[in-house]
Length: 224
Image (tube, rainbow, N blue to C red; front, side, top):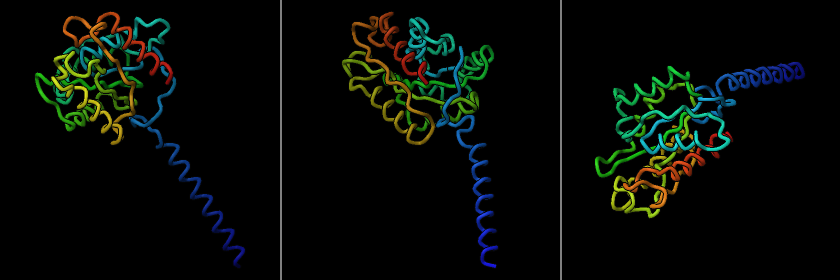
């Protein structure tokens, strides 16, 4: 009798294990999960959210020799600070949707956090709202997040970063918070931009700066 019971228990355990495995296989790494690993990427399968430096980085990516052409062609995200993307009715989401209409739903979205401290201080709550909006516009993508590109010197080169470099430190902290919260995977560190590879405003990359940033994107995303 005990042998029969023992066999029954073993069979039940095996059935339960099979069901768990089947469930995990259907839900683990599901579409839209920031922790999921994207399938093999094809041309124009990587979208992006950010500001003018984000756009310029993607321009540099497409000029990078040997890139895999994974990113969408550059579209105008100039001025796209965090609070703009946190607004579900922002015109930036209309521009994002135009790219989706042209190239299809992205497999990956790169988010670069941009704060213009001389105009407005952003918040981590707005970063969370950005991702809630992104989830509605690209629900099946894997998300990668970067802080704004570094500057050297840390403070004093780009006015948007503030006199103490708050625009860098804020976005670095919020990037780390978003990764810890499972909103996105850690994206590439960008920069640094210096006086020798920025235009006269000290904020935006020159052609040399674009090549630097674009190469960093290629070295990260082309090897996923």
